[in-house]
Image 1 (cartoon, rainbow, N blue to C red):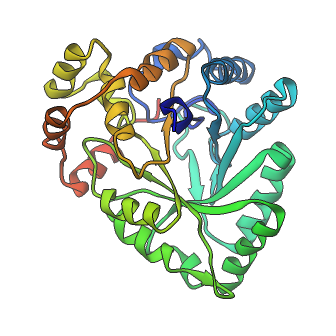
Image 2 (cartoon, rainbow, N blue to C red; image 1 turned 135 degrees about the horizontal axis):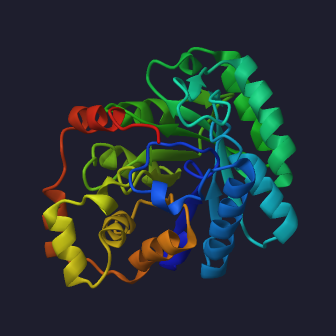
Length: 312
């Protein structure tokens, strides 16, 4: 498959005025008003579509991301765009960058029903994949048969059911969720997980998921911007070798995984997007990949460092 068609745009940092991405502040519109962020979202989507990107990922907790995306879809009527979104977290920051709490998690049948209706109202028939947001082994979903049955009914509406993962035990969650069945049919057909050259712990489980027929999406491939803004010297050296940015090298590493069906990028401006898209021209050899493999850190350490990032 053409590399550009394996890329998708994630709207986590565009649908709300604050997120934990490093290095995006200078790329976002001054003031970050609702209208300015809508315009920024449309600009990125326009640029991505023109480049050949056909996957867009949102979530109920990404502020007004679904609203912005729905408006763009209605205005542009683009062909061939696949939309994935997520339920389970609610955005509660009221468009404040300094809110003490930005999102609240709840994996309940009531939350699913409410948020699915909201998502459908905003995205309509464009919704192709609906995912449980940040599923963990502790999620009540694994014991809630009514919730599982409600999710399974989405297939009748032409919507694939998936889940995303976060945290140091992603691999355990992926394998656990792959075994869920409703009426003899596997519940989930997509999985979206964090994978980057610093955090590779879910790699084997994601490969297994891909081989078992699930569509695998990778998120946080730039480690929330850290690999682009303050990359390890190894990444910077490879960037110089390939005449590209460190962000392109990190994305190329993700694209080199044959089990990664869609690699999400979180650019917040057309220039940032174009820098990311340069990954499709980077060809990492075995030596390059071996060097990058040495950057992997223990999952517990990685997620502790991620948790320390500030919402800005």
